[in-house]
Length: 263
Image 1: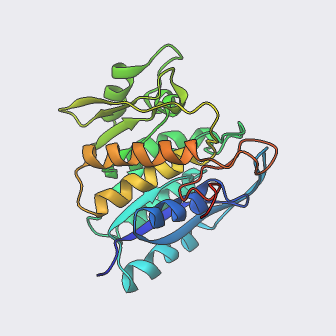
Image 2: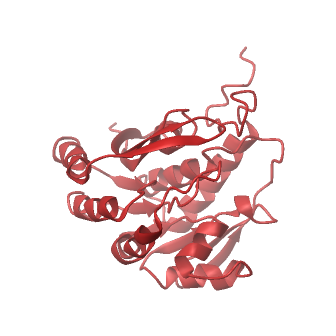
């Protein structure tokens, strides 16, 4: 049996906690074969993003072309993009993957506070990629930026506003809200997806893990709501089992429970 073929179009995290490193681990956790088109190389650890080096737009397109022509793509997860030029390249690259479902995780600010999406790129993201996405997975802050809303906007108002920018479903993830509840809206159904908060866990890479697990379940044949429920469970477990002792800052999530004792 051939496993689903998942493509991550995202940045590289040298500390291994987020970005394509987290995506590949989440794909494997879901039983999928992971591939990558790297958009940026970050010099980062658990404390800070020290530097960001953008990959040339044509190199991004060629990475996608190479895997699409030979291996094939069953679903795409998009993460860190950084610039308007990168967004334009990714829009071109998506024409190479046919009708594969696309999960867009609009990475705007890193866990450490570093800005990862330039101001002038935000309109390009709304205009070029949101209409192509099958599911968009912003956290609370990212949803406010996408919707152009103030700090008081929350919940149903935000999820409807983000949905109006595209054609697909929206999942506002609950990690930055008072309750650890995701909010799903596809234009018809508005569904709260509850989850247990793990204040003692390690959450670096939780958003990447969630969106990657969601993309994997779309490739496995789940509808967006079912995929969102399963992604929520996987991300919550990864935070619960997170590697708190790695680094001196925000530790990475752990989809494989590597920190648990082995028999």
